[in-house]
Length: 78
Image (tube, rainbow, N blue to C red):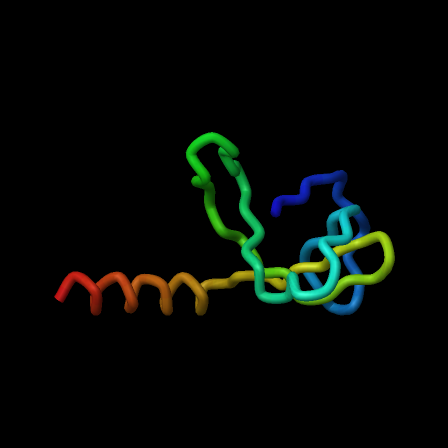
């Protein structure tokens, strides 16, 4: 299942907000920038953190997330 929509004003201490309600069970799901529906590829920039009746909110992936990703890549390659 996918969802796209207009951005909204972030709140609850979140970085991203999207006018789209994915419903219960969507927490932890990826948020992509530059998502290609045909190939299923894009850059993951956040995960679904919380929602209200009209808006979904995502947290910010900072340098720590990138560092963790790079460490996992290196461990897999070893």
